[in-house]
Length: 326
Length: 142
Image 1 (cartoon, each protein chain N blue to C red):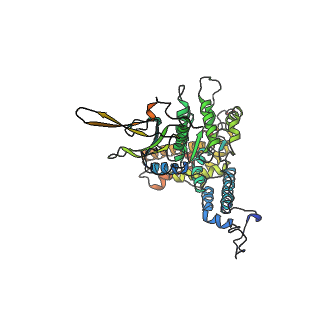
Image 2 (image 1 turned 90 degrees about the vertical axis):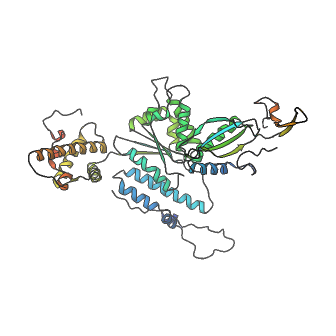
Image 3 (image 1 turned 180 degrees about the horizontal axis):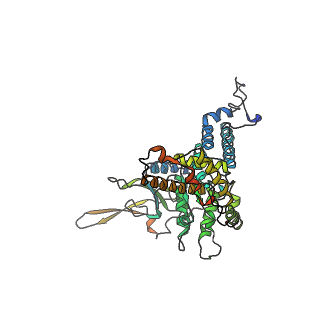
């Protein structure tokens, strides 16, 4: 679903540039042109790029567009001298495996920097091991070091729920959590924290740490991809790896996706990537067998094509195998 | 008597924002910043105590400012300085070092004269602050 890159601003927010002086008693610059600000800020380019590069992910794109509109209005208010505090931008990305949480988080730093929310375009990506120490007194300096490195940019904590391990009382995750919460509250203007993880486990994590939930302004759910989106993702992955599908293999892959989605343990884009890797393996074997059987030299076209047989050889098509767990 | 050691010492006190700008400059040059403190103001005192380790791989001044403010909260009546170390081969030295915190009252120095053999005089400088033991040298700010 491609979205128009221009923001739909409600009519009452559109202000016209004053055509003449309003008189000596009126404050200078009492009107601001939001459309002009939008054009010169380059936000449209950022949004268009995001639309192009990410397949699907409607809630994410909507939220980013809303943040961009918020920024625009903030700038407009600044030109009129109405200043408000820095907005809270901490986010939580939850969703099933392979739905693009880490990918979007990596891009979020760039987006926020270009929107002017953060000072620096850098992202520090950590997991629990980078924050929690192994012995008493180890955690606090470790966490603070990570926070200092991330200042001015984005701190991305992947698999955030591992921070809290209630079953092990010698676990120092709670200390790391407390330091994080303190920094998230006191230095909102300096740092943006993005947590990511699987939905059910993040829910448990938030229930045991209500402080986190209240500090996070944007809870964004990453929906599962549908078959058409997965096919587009597959084609993009293949294009970067210089492979291609012909009409038959595209149909074969569409069939494969239909069946695979219904099977258990489907990890969206990651499963697609694995399937493509297996197809490349089968293609390599086929080409090798053909060459050994005297087929002659292979050209670029042959080497880049994934044929329907490479895809249909998958176990997913094997109807005689017993059905997997529901 | 306001000690004039380090960079910017003849200027009025830097504000937090200005300190941040100087740190940002140092970080842009790729220098590692560290915070040190002491209560012995003698100019030959080169061994100030370290507040934490030097902060390598930082990109933003906010992290260093955090440490400066934490040090100020712990030692409000000590001299605190920020150092910036350049590790490039050929330099490998402190490039910038400026004081960011001072005690409210700085008593200053006196000249001590010592008579040696013949009528030779040997001179040394002594700070009034160091008459008292470490930790009790400056009155706490009210």
